[in-house]
Length: 282
Image (cartoon, rainbow, N blue to C red; front, side, top):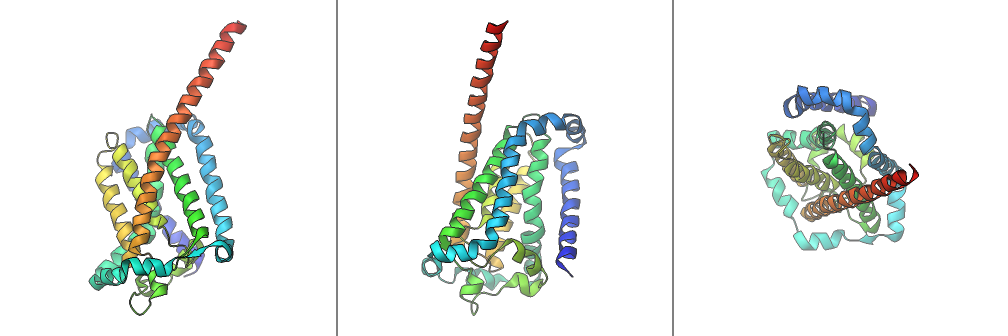
């Protein structure tokens, strides 16, 4: 299976998951309303979405040179992390079983991609676009801070640092997945775990929007927890990376709310001044 074929497979599976989740959690009525209001909603969230697209593009560009750059400016912290937690990830893998390996491998690849995309669909379908802006800003903060950390800290995952203790279960179970993960990950990009931080961000936003989507909350929390555990079970991240990812998620959501509130106040001030100026010109 080539990279293109694997990517198509992931897109197909995640696409089906998105359709099913949209029908179950968002509902046909909201989806129909979104079709008629899509332009207004995109206009409202467009500027923030454009910034996110720029951050993702920059992240993709810098990732190709980040390894060499981090070797020049980064601090080596793998030994420190190992001193903090020892063989904790190895202990997690003592519970390894074929059914768990299959589950966590699928969660890490398919579940994570679905978890990142579906909230964008769900929040775009809401009349109130504040959650959409908050989620988008939180994504920007996660990626931006994560990229800075990957440049500042050189940390190898447990499967690379202690291969005699931790197995690369994802790649032994599903060798072809390395074609995909190698395009978006580097061996030194482990602190913090962005899989964890972004998934936890989705869970926190699901709690914040539980009145609009009450049934999505338990699914988001369970899925986010599964993603966090999968990163350790598969030997990709340390427990320290996961804890740092949870802290990054909490910071990103709180900061995103404050930034959105500041932006709303600024917009109100601008509209008020424009209104007063218009009245004077009449």
